[in-house]
Each structure stands twice: as C-alpha cells, then as structure tokens.
Length: 277
Image (cartoon, rainbow, N blue to C red; front, side, top):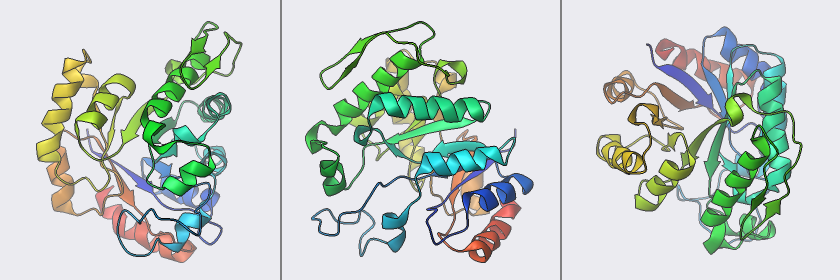
C-alpha cells in the first residue's frame, strides 16, 4: 500500500481559503488536511516559542479548525479531515463532543481527532486551565466525550467534570473518531497514548528509529493490539529519502507542512509536494 501523504497548514484570514485548499488537495490526490488550533495568543507572555525566536504571525490569526474543516468537508468527498492538534483541556467537553460528532457525521466518517496539551501557559490560563493538571484534565475530557459518543446513554463523573446519561446524537462513525496524540517522546506521553489514543503524532518525525520501539513496548504492555498502533509523522518537510525511511519503519501516513501563504504560494508548495503523492 503506498504511503498516504496528508498536509497541515496554518490557515488564517490572510491565507488561501479552506474551500480552495481542500478542492486542490483532493484533485491532486493528497490524503488529508489537518489544521492546528490557537484561540488567541496573549501579547504579554513568559512562555517562549518552542521553536525559538519570535512567534510567527500566523499563530495569532488561525481560523477555528472545526469551522474551516466543515467548509473543507462540504466541497470534498474523499479528503480526510483532522486537527493537529485540538487543545482538549481548553474546551468545554460537552460542546466539543457535539462539534466533533457533527463534523464526523457530515463528512461521512472522515475526521481524525489530533489531541495535544499545548505549550502556551498564558493561553491555557485564560481558559481557566491550571498548567500542572492539563494532562489529567485532557484525559478526563476525552473520557467524558466518549461517554457522550457511546451507543447507549452513559454517565461520566470525574475530578474535573461530569455529564449525566444523555441522548447525544449524531454519533461519530465507529463510536469515536480516530484519535492521535501529539507530544514529545517520553514515558508519560507513551503511557497516555497507550491508554487513550489510537497512535502518535510526532512533530517533525525525527528519531523514530529509536522511539517507535519504546512506544510499541508501552502499547503492548497496556494490552493493545500491536497491529493497531499508528504513528503519523507530523509537520514534516518531505524528501524522498525521509519518506523511504518512514516506509521502512512501517509508517502508512505522513503529514507534510505547507506554508501559511496566499493562494499562489500554497499551490506552488503543493506542486513541489506532488512528486511524493
């Protein structure tokens, strides 16, 4: 099976539109579109840019991923749609569960939920998130959403929130969307993936020869099916050698990074990436 080549991009009020991009991706044979999320970027912050230097302009201008992906779903038939990533701890989980289920239903089961814990402490604080609790809070919110997605009305009660047994339709295809967890390699993240996810979104995709066996060990120790684990390198700058290396590791999907530019800039980047599709 050929490797699926998906894309990610910071779509903003200054870039190519979701409708135009989605149509071009599907016409050119790309597998999917994943969109990042930032509700806002506080001007005054102590949290540094994880990549170093000044935070790029697009971080404070990102479109809401669910609204943008809804537009993309409406003009495509095959293109997979995902978040890369949703900051689950910053959402009301009952509302988020409805948004996800609706998008998955209307797109015919094409949605992938990418989950992350964030890096911007000030952004999280404005959402009422205590930084030290963001991982257990995120885990609980995933569990609460899955209670709402269950076939029968199911209650959930946790430390951070609860929901009564409820009628909550539509349901995502398969009971819950494919869920991939983003973050840096390490025992804590890998244990979280094994308990709560379907796989890993490693940003940049470096060092997978060493880290994938460690993740597989944690996955199998949790009693998960070894064949079910997915590793999807994310925000990758593709080269033939890099993609061949991923294929040797058994990776079936790669998400390449597109520039946050206008229509002509993004379409040129798609032309450059087309050789890999």
